Image (tube, rainbow, N blue to C red; front, side, top):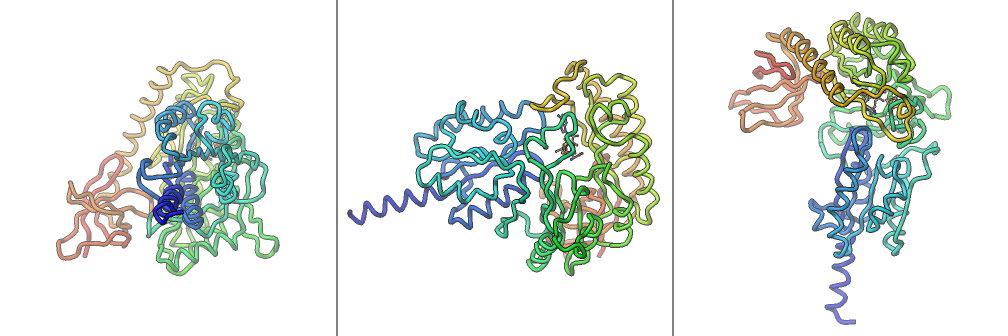
Length: 456
Ligand code: SAM
Ligand code: SF4
């Protein structure tokens, strides 16, 4: 074989070992992608910025709402033209788990279909693909007790990063695909979480966000009974690691939200004074139909704990409008709950029927126009609530983490412990660094953000 031939073969091998990864969906998916990237880099792959440059094209998908499956197939159809160039295609995440081998039928040029519960087997799957196997799947691990532990996470932000503490979900809310796509609930050991947090602190990270579909359902899988930590204890322990200045967590489930979490926030100053507690509906009848396992009254009791806390805790939530059979009166109960709680942010969604979920079989579907109307009414109400809420911060000082600069506006982007955006101007002789913490005096407010001046 000539030297030229060898060079061409090596160039092809190198091209095969490049990958492009596109991510859709929640923070869990974003963080899964960081772990997938870290795993691939460890396996000798190089990440590239475009599909054209890549030998391996991966698509990490989300199926929580809308016609996610159709969107994935449309995107795969766009990729078809690259197959002739010898590229390998893989579908990861929730749509991969949900659609399974059907993906090969509709997009025969796809070689890898892998749900999140199987990511820990990715290195072996990649070896099979490199060996020429046409179709490789990772779909059968939803009953696993193992998490996707990797020391090779390639975090994209050098100052704040995610740590998964629990994967999967056992709650089976009537509308939700997560238990079907992400498998059964499994917690990491607190030792392993704390080890990862310490490593991050050593690398200079100052903010950690603990992640899980329901972080507060956390059950320490440590074998040693004396070392087992509750979620609140784990939260406090992460907050006490030297160098860590902020700890956040998402998402919590109201049923498992104990007073001990509020007490931990009161006791440990590094725990951010923000709790995201999705309520979904203010009506007990709808909450029951959604199989949410709590009542409006129980939810409001948790709100009362937070409002009585020694530090002001910012509260945000998720709401679904137009769940099957939701009456105008029941929707009104959700509106009255918004008034009663006075949230700092509400992420509101039109109910979207999802495959496999129990609510798919419920009658009394609400027409899409009506769901859209309810969504608009709810958003207008929440905007008014936030306008009032945010005004009260004018004239108050906050420490912000500097996230970057908006060059067009000449403003720095800051985030408060309460997770509010506080943009600010800084004197020319004291320009702040991204990732640093600076004091800012709030001078004006908007429904979704604050504006201020850095204090030197
Ligand atoms: N585990 C969290 C909890 O129990 O609240 C939520 C996780 S889910 C990924 C994020 C949000 O998506 C939910 O809080 C819910 O508001 C929304 N969501 C989930 N399934 C939905 C559906 N079928 N239609 C509309 N919104 C949905
Ligand atoms: Fe979905 Fe309910 Fe689990 Fe949250 S608790 S992930 S909404 S099933």
